[in-house]
Length: 303
Image (cartoon, rainbow, N blue to C red; front, side, top):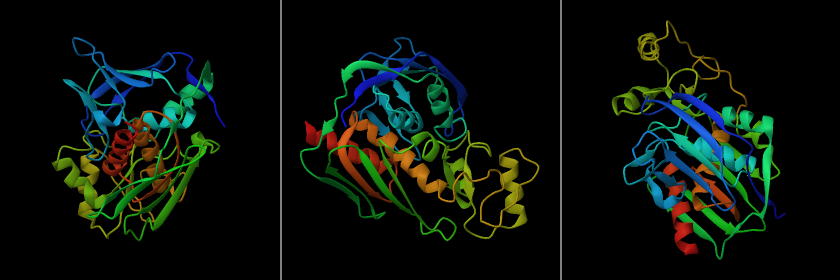
């Protein structure tokens, strides 16, 4: 079904620390005109430069998606990009006064709830769906990941997530324009494995991570002193492990919340193709690197 373009009704404000840099940012989400797409503006830089949210501007995919243009950088854009995509927003401007988008609760939920209270503005202009001339597949032989994009009558995505984890198992998720994105995908939070945490801290990642914005999967047995060490990193008196194999910081929204979050990420990353694809996306072990490579390859094909 063909739809019109939409933007948001008013300005929305968010603030908080970035997951990886730990920097505190204020973010303003603003309406934009037809055919303007999604753009980020760094208001703290002298010229207030704009970064178009397209795959050619991807500059880093280490645990999140970063876009940049000249001096302007925007880190961890995938959750807000996913929220706009899932809600059907074609055009918006995202202003940032620092380098990284606030992580908030680790999902797209805060954006979704704010926007849904007011609804969207129908801009009276037909949405420019991107038609795919032929199938495209991107593979990573090292990780076994792949993303396949095939022509279709409308946008959809199916993913399979396999970390070789006895806790997570193999999880799958589906999205199309008829799926209730706010309830089924948007609320699903980011996650990491317990054994990764110290490594990520040492490598200047997840500086803004805490027990309010990430699910922590405890794949291997941990000693009490290890739990105490991580509790100190998060400035908590104590952490324990649930019977299901997660830190006790959060209750899961769904048994397969981690897999659903991977769908959330995929939708945000694939939006960097420049719009809504008339395509079926199928992905195995998706991640920011292969997602954005697929979006970039698709844009090259379309050119």
